Length: 335
Ligand code: SF4
Ligand code: SF4
Image 1: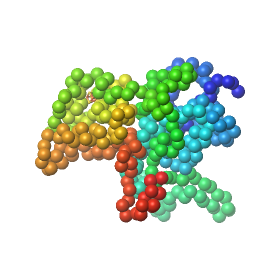
Image 2: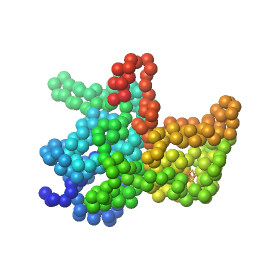
Image 3: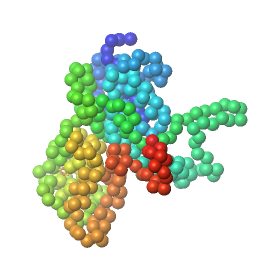
Image 4: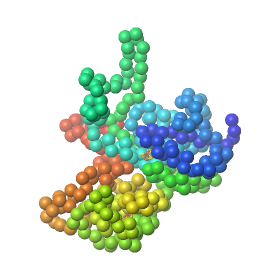
């Protein structure tokens, strides 16, 4: 054992991209490895839950946790890491605000199970068998699986979180700056999102072509459009989340001639990222006739996937609620 600060990494409902992004530190990862002691990182080192349980409470300097929370196992692990850690950082948009996994909050648990275990074209399951949390076979041998919760939650909806590093995934630059701030003890106030608190438009290379007033007669989809590589996407009738999204990504999508999809989440002045952009875009539709408004908005065929792609857990509406159930059932369904 060394007296270097101890660091843990953990992933919950995630794609693995955030784990990979730590490797994007390139050679700098060797410097990090010299300065810290990585005590838990299931994807890279052989340490088990029991090893974390054996550590003293608060003995891990910082846990960087990526992915959203869907299962009982994820809840248990993040509660354990919270107890053992001085600092917890929500790493990436899934941990920060639900991310891509939270798009499943549009559907009930039962719908998801039915699609996955019965209706997918590649599924062969004539007896419609679904996973059980516990199962004991005829020889009395049992197995227990993690519980699959009704909704996907962000990390701070389950445990106390000190900071968030936004992005899908966060950039190596932001990760390096966060690690440096931790090692030097120069962290900002608790609750800060560790990225610039300005809108993406403020740092966008196309900001000079962003129109002051825009009115939409149609919305075009990027893959159907011959996009001008210099001009603001909104000026081309293409939805860009830049006005409602925090800067700090180094405009990587925009430099690749793709509009911002909002993975850095909102700035501190915006409560609901999707609602902010919906209000801005809808108030700029160039018609007051309902049929024409409908026709213009039909150019955005997946509004939730467009405006809440990374933040449905943090949407003020949060998730689907079945109005046919009682209030207490409805509260239960939101867990
Ligand atoms: S934030 Fe993006 S890269 Fe990270 S786990 Fe979620 S989907 Fe993957
Ligand atoms: S709307 Fe998009 S393309 Fe236009 S300035 Fe903002 S971030 Fe850049």
